[in-house]
Length: 131
Image 1 (spheres, rainbow, N blue to C red):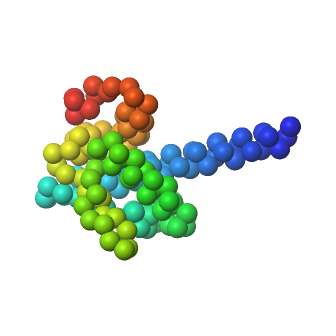
Image 2: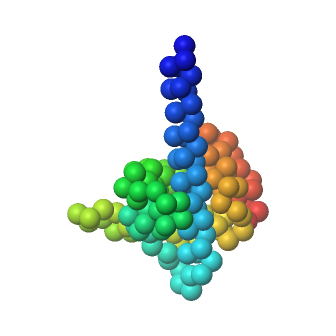
């Protein structure tokens, strides 16, 4: 019985860490968008992992899988686009006209993550239109 409780705690900690990584990713995206002067911001999962490892003092390799999966989720939802594919990986882009750009300018990363997760669950969010 004690081992099942430990397993549940490990899963909860892993989920919490993944959520924190997503929040860090959204914070880095927010910083890039707010300071951007053009219409496109490009992202590489490895660069995001480096930026996050500086903030959280964790290994960038451990985080890159979570980051890559999160970016793929955003692509599937139509919030970002794949700008380039190469042998070294994908380059993702956020366009100024996208809903994600508007959310990044107007909301905090935790609120944006909640909105993205609610879209994932099939709920319609009218908050995106207000941004």
